[in-house]
Length: 456
Image: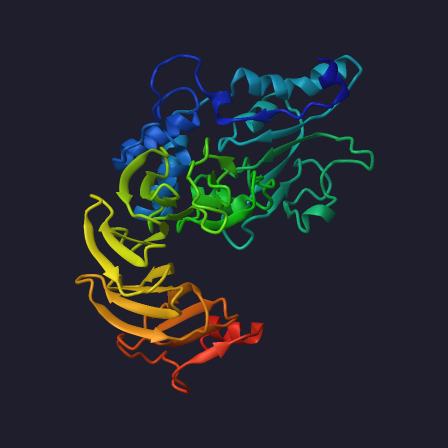
């Protein structure tokens, strides 16, 4: 109570505050609120999704992608608005606390942070006629990403107001010394708005999917690694960040909360010049890694357990095809190797380069693979047959990066000769986006790079 008397405690309430202490399974007609796990299981059951262990953000993300956000929010409202539920003991204690402190002659008001979607805390304050202000995160609509301040109905200027700009907003009941004139409840995950005017009903106002959490992040703590970062990439769905280091290990973070996945992937490096590498599959569920022990491995992103191993002596890097079914690995042995991701079976060994292959990339349709390396050549191969389709010398030094244009009709390559070049793919179907002014173009400055990006 000493800290409560001093007003130095900021209570933070999760969904479990309104949950039952018993072991009975939750459903929409239970007399208590669901935990995040309860809600995950209920949603998974409604939409026939495998959900063990339960992960609310992951289940909600799946439903939003497959059924649409409106259907997700309709089911959430149905589950949360079942049997009328009463505030829990914790809600009532916080609501009664200002009156208790008032009677003791040490009146203090609390800033309370809640991640729940319900209005049980607000109802507890109403029961004892204790004033409070709301600050509710807006998860949807034109003002998405802002907070809405809903003052106590008896306060002057009691109309809801957007808290913009956030650092300059002065409408909350806080004086110059930081002392609260009444309780402020901050709902960081949105939710139902208590006694809201029609214009501020905030329909579908739930921060619940992984996209919601990622969009809600404004700043993230610095992610420290024990060595210099070699590469960093996001999974296509934005859920994971993968970073490799020059000392070997690859590290994985969950973008929802910046949480490290656990122990890093220990990848043996070849040398300082040829470190390990890692890349996501298109669906983000797998990670392909290369390391100095001459092996390509595929890991499960969520469990971090190895699923497949493929030997490739001197392997330097690897990449998935657009459909995730094929992997190309390449390296010091001057070969690129195509193999089936699900089985590890070799499809083709691509021979033709006279030195190290430093980069490889699939065409957008997955029918061709492009390679480039120390022999200053780019080569295009047919994935189905392994046949060499074209070979071009476009640089005067080692080629360290290659890529297809999004339309698949042009090639981009970058070299240690300090140039990046874009040119038509001789074996690709012509399109309107081909550069027709020259057979090749060499780029040196930011303006020319901008031309590549914008296609001018």
